[in-house]
Image 1: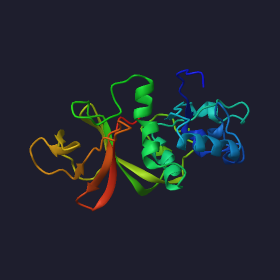
Image 2: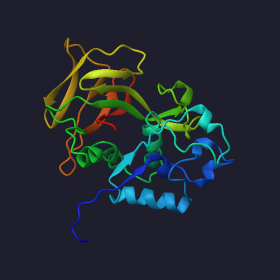
Image 3: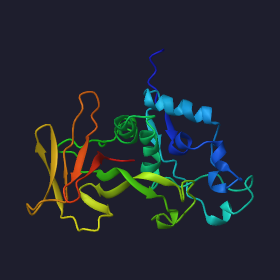
Image 4: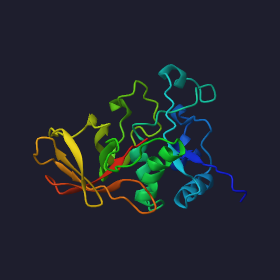
Length: 239
């Protein structure tokens, strides 16, 4: 009301978990701040959906196994969150609580704008920082397969939807889950967005069209896996 420029964020843990998830005081759920009541969680989800909350953070806080094996009150607070961020966040989309584009905005362009970073978009000429994922692919989160040395994930063993197939950082593939090799890709302008093609001119396993919204400069659009006919999404700069 006073015209103050303020931003607000929330961790994925507090958006998708509540105090009931602690169960028999499993220390992977000992977080800071602690998990709260379901009413509090729902209030944060509503605030994310209506734009009161600007960003979602992974709250990535690795902890050594030894400090998590102690009694609940003595165990270190914190949980890893980077590698489970997307499937955990997609819970909110699949439940109908938060629209997909609002969710992706809070994960990409929202943090980029707040931190004044030149990213979070697939605009022509921008860095090719993006990922390709299937929002509906059923997965089971397995912390033992994480690249992180720490495994203290509150989502370990949980069923979810959303699988990342490829992550590209500044035009270089840094993660690729696809069984089929993907040629080196380049992005070129095409109408209101950009498309992906191989540098050799050959067809890619994916085609991508980045849609630039009038009110949200987040480059996001549907991706069709031509070889399987499945729908994915490409997202610029996932944080």
